[in-house]
Image (cartoon, rainbow, N blue to C red; front, side, top):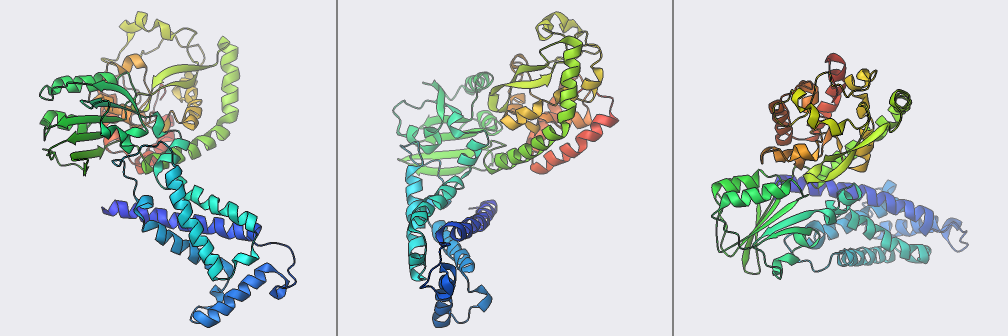
Length: 487
């Protein structure tokens, strides 16, 4: 295990220690310890009786413990710590192996395992320190279910990602030379995902054919995982190997021989059912990275919606006055991993303008993909200021809330534009599209596709949350210091 993996475990451990301790102490104070007067208890209350029992145990067994630490809250924090140490020593909680077999698509087995460890530890602890007979039995039973639910939720990033808009059950994969009844289809990495294309009898000596197949389906379908059964082959061609590495997706290779590579890159290999499996995940925004980015997006978009609501209402009324309804339009755009979604924006062009693109192509100044016209005749008179300061893009904060877009990322394009991408530029679909990005803070007026390409690839290859924050801070400056025509 590398240093970053250890760091993730430590951070998660500390988070669970703090969070579960808070839940446990709050639950004990509000539910488990009865508010009724106890005539037989020391001090007339259950809480004072528990503290008295703890003081007695301290004097008998651990007199070295500081007196200020002898209270129920401290003992509960210690209990949570010991429980987490026990839980982390078990492989079933600390390590989710996507290359293990999973014949069931639910989490019941994992929940039961965690429940048994938690409930047995809890009952032993409260019995050992003579707390059990002083607390509510009904609420105690409920409490045995509460913490395991929290733990299964935070076990890995899948459930959190699902809640934040990226459920693994909606991810897709394609296979090459993998039989329908293959035992490897029961691997966890495929069990939760949906197969959308199966290629059979593929000759791996024809590398260009494989690359073209992947590239073609990538332009029309949402693909997250590529599974290749090499059968007896032990290697891929250099060109195909580099293509898969730079594809920025999850890739699983299966072979009866040990797989050897010509490039150095991070991967994981295991022997399963007599075959060698190699898995690498070059998905840029996945797992904890996706979760942190989504939390940042949600925070900023919620703040922006409330802050700009008066402006949004004014623009809505103004456009309705200028050209009637509909004021906010929905445009079909292509997002993360080829997912289609409706992007919202204020309508600043006359009705039906998008249908006139073909008749105006001779005015398009861009040389390849991007459709952009200077002094576009389709624009409604009097809304130029909205476009200049990108106020027509304000409804896209609702796209961010839905999870279709991010605050920062390559601008989402139309499906007809995406089909013109070469296989290298298809990488732009492997990150969330954004409201702003590197292009917008550098050369937002450009009509050259090569400039779009340069900044999009630079963003993909250098993406980090720090880069997102840097772009967010620079965006207002770019809006007011550059004579711009919109993001």
